[in-house]
Length: 112
Length: 116
Image (cartoon, rainbow over all chains, first blue to last red):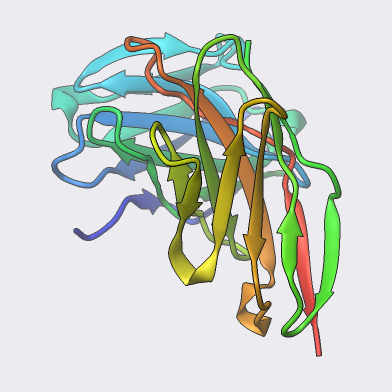
């Protein structure tokens, strides 16, 4: 059990640029979740996958956001045309079925 | 819709004193309840969970929580605080309805400070 891995840990970009984050879940976990956490707040659900299928998306996930999980393994979260309000910590979690979610250390996104 | 309210965004205790962090939830279906801890620039670590069965749940690092359905509460306690307990604590709820993905709804967190 090597834990959930997220890359990069930090990303600084200019407004309007596209960014992509990667999450490698615990290998035997079939569910993968993305959350966003802003300063002073708890994480907010964005989307989740069961294997390769994206089964639910939050209203927080605007058209500029897209997530994929090809082959049910790692996942990517892409943000197009970044805006100031996208600055946050993006957290990935994985679980096996309904077992508790294990979180990665997150990717902190800063928009200049 | 589910929600979580954590009373007190900041709690300060002396080392060795009782820790009590409050959490109230709202859920239209039987809930799963969780406490997570977050250290600076890190992800969340599970402290304990309630699913079904015994309402007093013991977790890691000496923490425990009691599910009280009548009060819709799931308060976190530790008899004796240690300096290493200083961190942010999040209460979370998910529902027991299958097919819902068990996404977590978090409270806004409580920052615990432990003083000498």
